[in-house]
Length: 160
Image 1 (cartoon, rainbow, N blue to C red):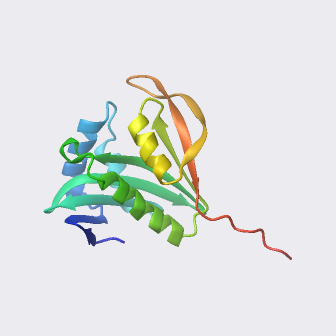
Image 2: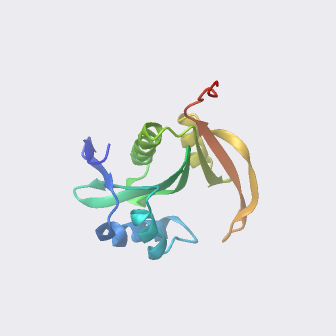
């Protein structure tokens, strides 16, 4: 849940005040980083779930996702290089999946670089599976994305 502290890690709603730290992590993590405007939009978009992870009030990671009707989509996730391997990304995914379950999402989708075996393995721990491939999805360098999906709720069709 938002504002829940987990072993010194606080996961909270992303705010405009967090953007400079979020952008520093984004730039350190990706060859083609998101702009400040993209993160700003996620903070204020009605169907967005934008969270930061903080240790001692310092942003060490973030995740952005969207909920559209009964589907979730994880858009971006990163952890500061000095804080990787500590389970922070997993905790943020857990947070977002809780929100999506609460909002009755049936499925959650994401794209990840084919070469990012570590991220794919982490998502697989949560039950995400390979759905398909998006050719040349990423630039700098050009690379395919694997599309992954997690089925949360399988609602039975309503009977008349």
